[in-house]
Length: 191
Ligand code: SF4
Ligand code: SF4
Image (cartoon, helix red, strand yellow):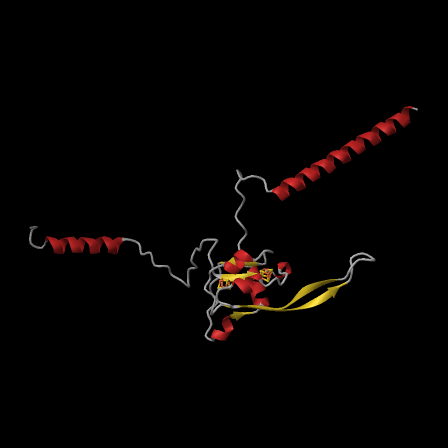
């Protein structure tokens, strides 16, 4: 059994230690929090990449993505070619009052049209205002952080390797043609 009053002394010591430590309270909104770059705040739409494939709307577990579109006929690219039809986006909206921020829509989009932005300050007093239409979703795009730098030890992507090889081949061909032209000009000069 300890000395009488030792419990009280220990308690006071803890209180004193805590009182002299710096508080960890985040002073939001005066100080903005430092969020990790992959924070799921809001979803941005880069509609130029959207082909209206409907995959995101079909896979969304909450059915909170609304897409409307119509078909347009595109004339053939070359004479004698066939006309093509393409989907034109009329409406793209996400209801953030239903969204559960699972990220499935972003994962399944095959055309990189949806991105996470860390922005989170879009609370509304009217729940209907949480339906963000395409213009609003585009605005969020400008708050999407740049992707992290590639790992320097990572294997070169196949597309980049193929493009680099083609560029090197073309550069070598151009160099060879230049040398041949110079040699030809020198021969003509000697003659
Ligand atoms: S994050 Fe999930 S719930 Fe929200 S819109 Fe995308 S798929 Fe739907
Ligand atoms: S999955 Fe991507 S490309 Fe398809 S409709 Fe959704 S955002 Fe557009």
